[in-house]
Length: 331
Image (cartoon, rainbow, N blue to C red; front, side, top):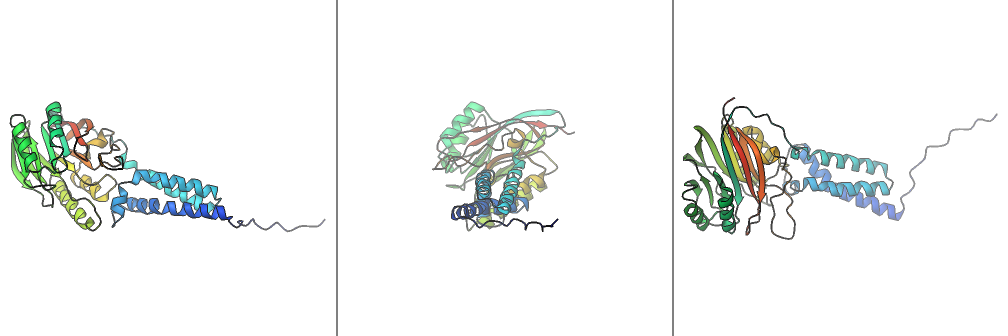
């Protein structure tokens, strides 16, 4: 009986021209999701264009998924395996957007409504005025509030929100924090755009309030964006032991390392995430693209979250964030 040698292992067949194009297309589609997801996993915002692309992170599952389909169609095992890894990592990297369960300690002392609104150079002032009349908040954090905006808000709500801390300026520089509670210890975080803050006495408890509005991460000024977010982080770290509320247009999402550093430093919770609404986009409300990222936030320490809503403001490219909160007493 003749013995035969085992057949040689199968070798990959040469790619047909159509499959070669498909494989190249799959590889190109993987580049951006792989690079951005790697930076997210490594907890770095890196340099341009990573900070800008991180705003799209949950949406990068689309090109990653398409790359997987193309790699499978091209019958390239290694490429298909790489596409599976990138798609899985991109989807996993969106986990911080998921609901967050937090056990609240201490009795509720006061119910507080807070609004964070960017009125885009004052153009959304009229719409914000209507929102304040309808919702009756106790705290309002307004970014890009020029002098005309400031005068309108302080005069219109002189009875309901008689206390305020402000940074006067035109365009994006002006900002104001309106309060139904007396304010003291006014301070300002140094920044290109106004970031006023103060301490409010709410139900006998001192609560530190801070408006946030760092520069956006535009190409050429990412280092300034990081520096101003770092200043907010340093402020949050100093307030970590007491009730704190930081609200405004952060020009950063939960996929940015610099934003997550603020949460960690101050023991803060994003009210939107607590309310299972962290994927709700707040920007851009104008222009050719639909809103795709949440960069407007209300961050809290010492508060429980009842509800969060997002309100359109005619004239502004941002949605306002309305957080319904309970100030909690000591444990």
